Length: 341
Image (tube, rainbow, N blue to C red; front, side, top):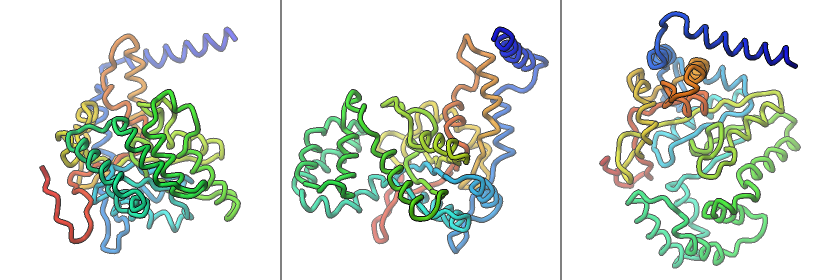
């Protein structure tokens, strides 16, 4: 055991010492150079399929995986165009199953039937929520009593789709100490995944389309439990395969309530070299080559704030990023275009 510990210590010391030999490029220069080399234009044909180098990259990576997890920005017009193009590439590879999270814009159009049964309470709640969102307040717990009233009035039957939706809504407004119970997203996925195994063989291939918050590897910042993507990645390891996850990003230096949504202060700094290296309106970057230099930079600064810290969450959470240089809010045909503020 002592020999093993000495060996591990030597490896860590040698790695640190090797990194300190010679000046070498800084982490920011390393990131910029990698992004310039890995930038791939994302193009969609008139038929809706991917074209060009990004298409070749996506096909090759998806062929090696059984789970493709796409983290989206909700309510962005370009997202369904991109996801549809990804799906066209996945079907020939044997992907037959899709897990989708509906964002507020799509959800508003999908929940007409449940809201008819509780129209008065739901409309009143909707007005309050929209007013809060316009002011940049996304704290749904402020409407906990009103949401609970809508859930009770819906009277959904057990084991129905509406019941699952309402249970997820109740979980969303629960206090942190009430989150020790089951994780509905993971339970629903496992239920359908096992059913797919029983119907069509032992190795179903699945595309996920959820918000980027759920698509990142690691822990959920507000609850502390693992994300759905992290759960799927661990499942992939157990089944001797892999997950490919990528984020579609369009945030900018805007104000709350504006479109696109404002970046966090960390994202503003992290995305600067991405914007500089972008080669088209839609650009794909493979992030995995940045993990080793970022780990080394962190190892070299154990007693201080490591240089390049702003890239850590993005690079370690996702395999790739699609940066949208231009985007528009979702809308139905005939709806007036939303003015970009």
